[in-house]
Amino acid sequence: MDIKLRKVSENIYEIPQEKGMNVPVRVYANDKLIEKMKEDKTLIQGKNVASLPGIQKYSIVMPDGHEGYGFPVGGVAAFDINEGIISPGGIGYDINCGVRLLRTNLKYEEIKPKLREIVNEIFRNVPAGVGETGKIVLSPGQFKDAVEEGLEWSYREGYAWKEDLEHVESYGRLKDASIEHVSDLAIRRGIDQLGTIGSGNHFIEIQIVDKIFDKDIANKLGIYEEGQVTILIHTGSRGFGHQIASDYIDLGLKKYREEINKLPDKELVYLPFQSEDGNNYWKSMSAAANFAWNNRQIITYFIRKSFQKVYNHPVEDIGLNVIYDVAHNIAKIEEHKVDGKKKKLVVHRKGATRAFPPGSEELVEDYKNIGQPVLIPGSMGTASYVLIGSEKSMELSFGSSAHGAGRNMSRAAARRSFNYNEIIKNLEEKGIYVKSTTKEGVVEEVPEAYKNVDEVVKVTDELGISKMIVRLRPIAVIKG
Image 1 (cartoon, rainbow, N blue to C red):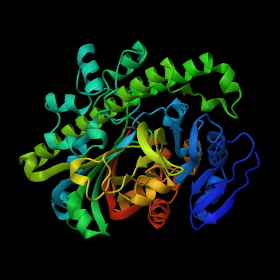
Image 2 (tube, rainbow, N blue to C red):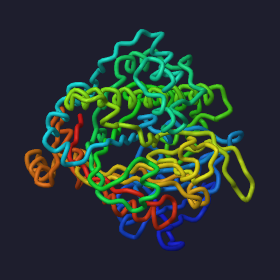
Image 3 (cartoon, helix red, strand yellow):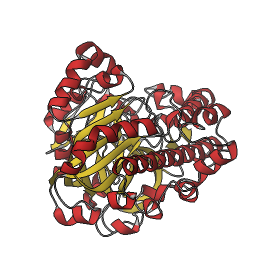
Image 4 (cartoon, rainbow, N blue to C red):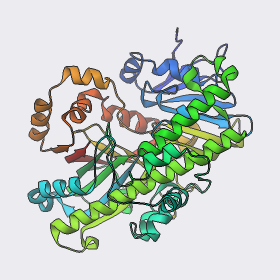
């Protein structure tokens, strides 16, 4: 496919609207990142998304954009709530894959002698890898409550502190969640997986604060000094969300075949939002999102238990407070300005993080005055960033930001190109201890398989979509 790409201004490119497209494509990237996007189908997929019914303003590709299923990963698209659609592929198979950041009262010097012991304890308590099951056994009724109530269930069951709920996007609950139209297979796949990481690019990292760019906002987040220890958790809805996505993609391909055949790519399969099918998927997706928030919460619970055992101190003395928890594979119903008028939209963020500015009604109370924290993890062994949402994001990207480094090499290519022992040696030389269920999991997620996260964050900051607050550096990685 021929892509007519023009540079609008620094860090902004556009694919102009043409026949078959309902809106133009906006790509937020520097010249270097654009060249990477040209190596796969990222830009083609961004253009394809622009053909979907009811899409508003732009099809958007964020700086970390790379090829995905139908939509590019790093894709944002907003659809009119009455005339538009909801796309399972535009949300992703791992519904509410997201990131949670915890802060501690520990400094690097205090954790260094106990680092391997802590990692090994967490590894025992938080299962990692394909198909792994968790330590919590739920009845079908308990599982229903968990996925319909979100973090309110975790709090009631003793897995969460009250303040945890105050530092999670949407307070950890999408209220339309219902298990009524979720398949038995999805329930079977998810019922024993709460409190697990999974595989792929999911991880738990122990990090230290490497650099503070804005001390005032960092302090309001609970980050006070360089060398302070933090924990980053990256995982999602596991087999439960994956099966829900699969079920509704199959439904769309069968039931809306005539409409889908008109699209440039069948992977853009969608359901009209105001249809019964669209409503059923919305409720099911919301249940998967609630599962993911509970999943990260129960992992937090076991991380707290692990630190408490190793240090033999009350966990409150150690800290391990939630700074924030963001979703980056999700759809939300939000109001945004389109052509100067406020409209209610179904905003799809696939590999994109919400980045609302100060004063937004959607923000949790503690952060209304500073804006929404944005968490951008790097690849294994590279820096991660904390940013804060800004007003410019509402103008440019429906209040969205990048979500990570973005792949530039397939997992198969990484396996062909890199050696496990060399990777471990290189990471150890950087002072990073890695504990993984499989060697393949490490090789596939080698830092070289990803774009430069510093470049992604630099573009995000320069555009004013989000503002850099803190850079974090890993000292230990746990993965599947």
